[in-house]
Image (cartoon, rainbow, N blue to C red; front, top):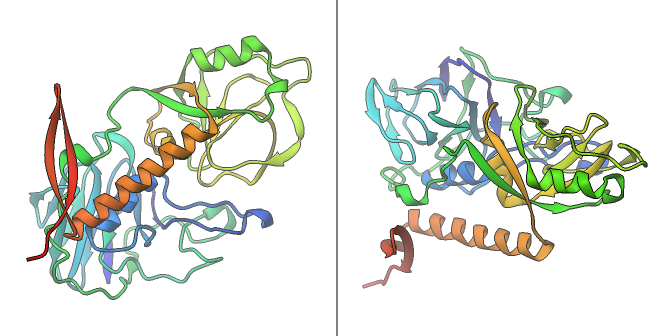
Length: 333
């Protein structure tokens, strides 16, 4: 069991989300940044979709009431019993130990994973919190959470090299989109504006959607309102005001505003980790491009998982001024 001593910002239990319930109007929910969250789980030996803690900007203070192995993912200062430790590395905590995660230096969401995951009752196939529908709720100081069973030996000391960590420190980011399906609702000028302008993330952004401010995207004479259609995380709606809204993990399953595009899956974490005031640009790509990028990302995540499990070894290679990490199989003696 763990006990939450301090919860200075929104803190929820999340996993990979609810699959198969969108037809009933239930959002996917789950990790806002599935790349970082999955790595956090791999660091403690869990499957990528295991329930963990997701915090917004400022991390919690946690007391362990039993031994556990944990890892914190994010650009953040972390301490155990007041002694600084590293993020992106797994540690063994004993009963009575206190973990404190500070404020993220970049990005918006951080994660705390525990070996065995957070033990909870799945609702509609998931432990993900979705307060709007009463599926769980934000955690508060004094809450106690049970952890799942796990063999702890060998799970501590796993470390993700800096070159493999996601970098969300850029204040201007390019996000790739698949254009459509309602392009007839926009003028040629409106589409060009969308693809050639910078848009600022506003404070009116949350797990449901990120509202953007910038040049107005011009609608055609058909207007912004359409017959309600399905939408999904990544969909970019443009209401009558001409300012785009990027749907996120808690987005509704249908909407009546014209859709100019959809952020590809691999770039959704980039949007999720963008703070109010940071800027996004959109770049159009094809379906095959989006699929190929997703395949590459999944292969990279599987390589990271196998590296952390000791099945692959990592080594650095230099290409010009850039240093990369490559993997090779561990040869058995």
